[in-house]
Every structure is written in C-alpha cells, then in structure tokens.
Image (cartoon, rainbow, N blue to C red; front, side, top):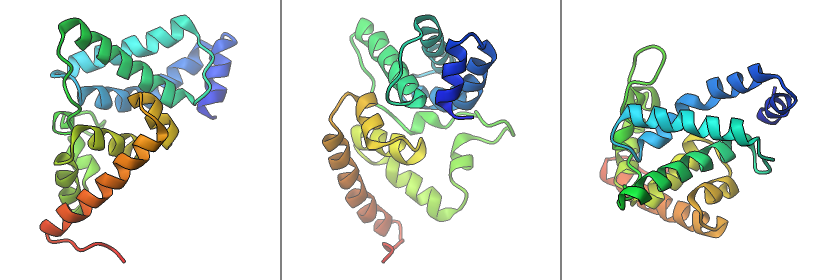
Length: 182
C-alpha cells in the first residue's frame, strides 16, 4: 500500500495506518535529524514530534508523505536551533549511530564494500548543503522538488548543488584511487 493510501486511510479513522507510516519512516527521519543534532535521543524526540504534529494537524499533503514528513522534521530542527540562536550544519559523521535492527552501525549498513566506503568518506568532505542534497536525493530517494522543499530552496538550486557535488565527488574519488565510470 502506498504512503498516500495509508495516510488517506488514517484520515478516515484507521489509526493503525499511521503506525505503518511510522514504521516505514521513523528510522530514516531519525537518521536525517541526527545529522543536525548532537544526540540520538534528541533526534528520536524530534522524529516523534514530527509524526505527532502531522497526526494532530492532519494536513492535506500534496508533495508526498515522506517529503512532507522530512520537511516537518527540518522545520522542527530549525525552530529548535533558532531558539538557541545556533543552527548546526548537516553532518553525515553524526549519523554513525546504531540504528539498524541487526545491531550493525549505520555506516556499515550503508557501505558494503571498499568503494562504497570511499564514496561515503568523499561525501563527508562535501560542503553541508551539497551533502544534504546528496543525502535527500540519493539516499532517501526523494525527488529534486521534494529535496528543494525540505531545504527551502528552489529545484534549480538543488540541481546546481547536485551537479557541483558530482564534480567534487569525482575528483575526491580519484584521490581515493577510483576512476570515474565511462
């Protein structure tokens, strides 16, 4: 069943459908939020708050549930740090928390072989906005439009950042000893 179908059923009173959405996206949203926050517990708290906000407000969602959820989480982080007057940049290094069901760590789950590990290291060297765009589009498999909405920039800006990221990643992978694919 699609996210949109589950959300529609939730709006019709089937609360178990919302539980399914939490199962689908709770860990992914927590990992995304952990990129901004210093503790895994804070990321979990904001993940729960993001789901609770949507559950309470029951908004009409146009751009897809996952994108709306990530945008809600992004806004919660922004408001949290705006209160403290210090917005931390997105960091892949902070995502290296144990969040997989089998007890492995996030980096090991993401990086299965040496080339993937090298790519992960190279992604970590990107500027924060490039790193976040790569994360949302390639790891979370969101569209450019959805990533733009989450990051509060234009689709063109996301496209530009991803183009820059690919250029930098190609150069960095060559430094790691990998050549670009033809």
